[in-house]
Image 1 (cartoon, one colour):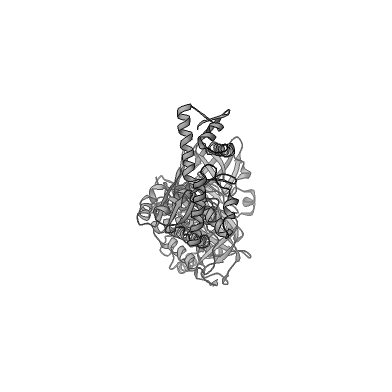
Image 2 (image 1 turned 90 degrees about the vertical axis):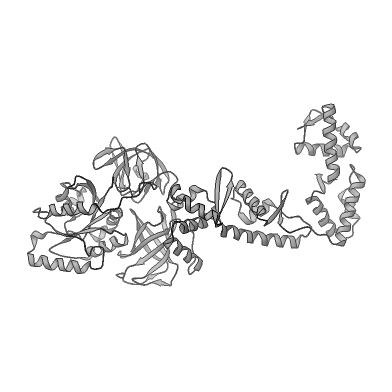
Length: 635
């Protein structure tokens, strides 16, 4: 079923509220102050029984310039506008400002309603209508129906109702498959029921009993009940105005401008990248870092605008900008927004959100600007690629990508496969969840990694490489999860970028190379260890045999790194050949005798108790053997 929301727009005291009262028989001025002053201050909501039997939600917005922010909160979710113009005054300042806002928010269907026709004669009415036609020439209201009515005498109301009914047939059905989103325009408490929020569902659907999350606070609560058009219902979906009774949350925890959605589907941000249209009617150029007010959904936030592609924005120009917000904004890509000057307040522009969770951008950066251009004008695959590229630093999983896109899994499945197939996106199975990385991100990391390894190999020609932990911290950062890091290293090894040996990383074509002197030292060290078997030489004794202490240290460390020599304990090393023989002796002895003591191990090795004990404790540490009183068994 298609759901339609109608909104009014127009200058103060042009009869918007009276028109809705005459059409629906219901009052939208509910505040005491509104009744006393005779103007709408807050948003008014009711529903309209159309001649065809359908129901449409209807929003009455205030016309006074002081309450434009309330008008913006209401108008953001409408499908059809009633542009109300009083016959006795014609087009006025708030008529124009409201209309500019409608265009900025991409409202494309409307009816021009000329009210108070009982106050003027036919000649005056004809002149007013001619002026109206000139005012809206070249806009979406150029060919809109013009209905002449009097809310007081009821003249023209039936014709207006039929026009509304006819135009609602052409309203596109909203996306009920997307993520549920409801920008909150009112919050109140009802005795016996608790907290109630109202708003227009702009995408997806919600059912009674579902758990929802309030953004940006991320407070979790439950849908206790849903009301639409004064009726209790089980479900609300895109395009419907509804009231939602929430359990387990206080009214003080929710504000107008908050967004109700499902858990972990939105990511509030203090920075958003946008395409801005600066109105021709703006009084002066927009300066970089100028303070403005941004209106999105039902929220109003003060921010500074960083102009990315030009020095300043002149009236009538478009620009890529980044808004740096004083409070978090919860938005999605392609959402519309409006900006007003900070003081004095007037509407100066608006546009679309390109990146709802942006990183701090530099001005005049061609790569950044081109990226925004692709995201703005590109197809789903281009946008998907840009999102993954932007998220790669945080090693995104599928749910992170969907959250950033505001789309469901089905809608990106084919595009994601294409990007993987053509090598643009790299898939890594990092533990429980698959991680998606852009090739450019990985190539940047490879460049850094290769630079580090080249410098290391140059400075340390005998070392087999850098420890994996050091590479992890220097190249990928301490926050990367170990399983993801292991997957990246495996991928790079399979791609012949690096070699890994034990816990070390080296360039693929690197081999430690000894010069003649170093090779002589190497042979001498290995010869001494081979000669002395299980009573190995001390480091200090070996070092004293070599004049070049620095070269000796480098060679000795390289032999340990390569595991030609195995470190057993402080100042105790063993030739790897004898290390393996010692293991075999333990295995065979225990198989024959059930266990082995230190004395028995000493005798088998033909060494001293000191070395036998140190070696056995080493075997305990690596869980090769296990101590049982004064004997060892295999672990």
